[in-house]
Length: 307
Image 1 (cartoon, helix red, strand yellow):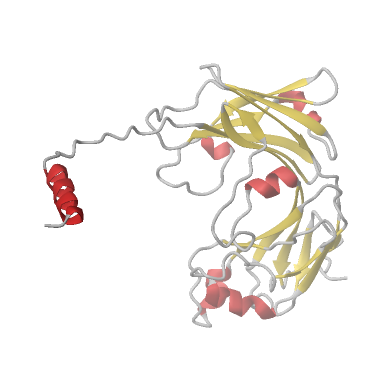
Image 2 (tube, helix red, strand yellow; image 1 turned 180 degrees about the vertical axis):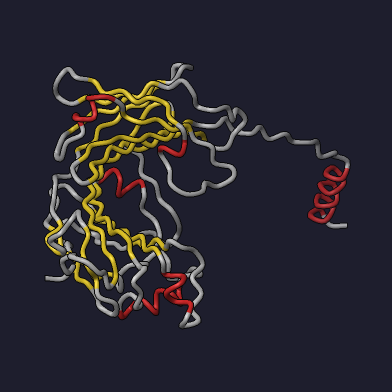
């Protein structure tokens, strides 16, 4: 027997004599995630925070946290725990149980267009996260002129929605909620999975300040069960006197945009760039919203949405 073959056999014999022991992999310790959203809705300031944990060995609720914001002056705004319904609309995933907090009292006035605010999160166990956010500047919807009021939108028409620039905005996310589409499309045999229908649009730069409603909404719905509905909406809303809804244009600054990137921004999946740092992770986000309401073929003294 040659030396190489003898060596190989000895190695195999020695390996066969070894028992593979059990290896125990410890489950990682979960990390705190804090999502703090400072927003201005049609001129009204507000703040909402969600606290939760990543999956891990210590999945205990994140309760008793102190969340504060502060501008250049001495005034400090504090968040208070609220019911989850006060922070989130709609249903949540079964394994997602965040703690909801909301900015309370006169300190809401700290949240102003263009303001730079520091955000502090302190947990009872001693963990601390900190970050800074600069709110986008205010802007106006210039078509329709009735914003934030109600206007008449004729069926079968496409409305160009126009707004002024918001300095500091990295993206605009227009969102439309439409009530009554299920009954309106029933005669055409088009199935509407849910009612109301919520559709999102997207403008990816500070200077991109126009979008067509409803034809350019639904960019994130195109591969879902709403596809037939989206095709039918390319020429406008169907004829019905019971159709109404609201369009909200959301100007988001850098932190909000980076935390919520996904879809067409990142084909490989969701990417979250944090802006709260310390013993955990999260986002300190600033958003300015402007909105208008619409009714299709509205009767009464309502101005037209299009000028």
